[in-house]
Image (cartoon, rainbow, N blue to C red; front, side):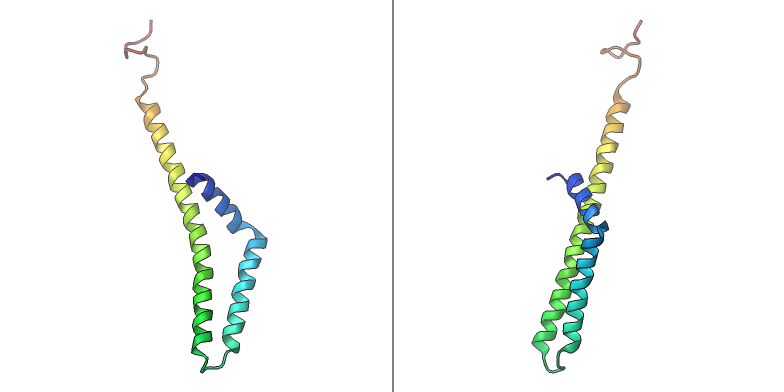
Length: 99
């Protein structure tokens, strides 16, 4: 899948209310679990922290896909403008004006 397509799909996903609700729900569940753990349960606290970090990484990766797609799209537009700027307008294949 090219970067532009991936970026567009990632953007739609990030803007989707159901996805947002799912992410928020998982984060809330992890935070509630963390709060309910005994202070002495260092392993459980560590697992919750890692889970939150991984959840954040999912969103960060999606945002990076969006950014990469935007950069790729911009570069393609720049390349197209550069290419079109190199084509002499109103001239023949040899660069001389058409009569």
